[in-house]
Length: 313
Image (cartoon, rainbow, N blue to C red):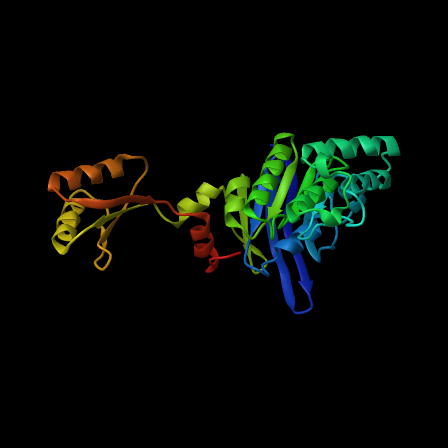
C-alpha cells in the first residue's frame, strides 16, 4: 500500500525540552492513523513538523511523496490542516469564508464559488451559508473549519484535536464527515484527547510519550496487548461464592479471582465463545444461582493507561 506520510528519526527541541526524540511512523494512503499520547508528549509538535509549520532539528519526513524540509511548498499544496481551534473569520458568512480561500488559492472566482457550494452541501451547512460565522454553534464552526481545509482538495489531512469542546452530537457529525473523506481516498493523521474517537476513526494508532513512539497497532491489537477478556460473575452469599469458585476452577487454565465483598468471581477468557459457554455450564451443573454474568473487554483507555501510566490523553 502506498505510503502517504513517513517520519524517520524526527527530532525537535525547544530550549530544555526535547519535544521529539527520534519519532518513527508511517501512514498508509487512504487510512486514518490516530496519534495518541499524554499532554506534552509531542503530538502537536509532530503535526507541525509534518505540515511544514516547524522545521525539524533532525531526522527525515515525507508527506504525499515530498520531503517536508526540502520541498515544503510542494507539501503545502497537497495537505489540509485543522488545528485545535476553528480558524475561520467570524465576520464573514460561511460561504464568504470558503469562497475567499478558493480565490486566495487561485481557483478563480467562479470555481471558488462552485467549490464553496459543494463543500457547504457536503458538510450540511447550506441552511446557514449566508449567516455570519459568529452566529454559528461550535459544531457548525468546526464543520466549516474542516470544509475550509478541503477547498484545495488535499490528499492528506492533519486534524489536531478537531472535536475539543464539542457536544457528543457535533462530535459524531464530524466523525461521519471524516469517515466520508477517507472513503474518498483522503489520508488522515488525527491527534485527539478522546480515546473513543481514536477507537472509532483510526485504522491504526501510534502512541508517543516523551517524544518517542512507544507502541503501534490497530485499536484491537493495542487492546488485546493489555490482557484477555474477563468474565465477571456475581453471586449472593459465601456458600455460593465457594461453590462458584470450585465449579469454575475445575477446568480453568487460570485460577479465578474472587472479590468477597462484592460477591464477584472473575475468570480470564480465551478466544471465542467457548470460555463463556463452559463457565455457564459449570455453574448450572453446580446449581449456583447467578445474579450477574458480564463480559468485560479491555478498552483503548486501558491500553493507554498500561502504556503511559495515565488514564487520560
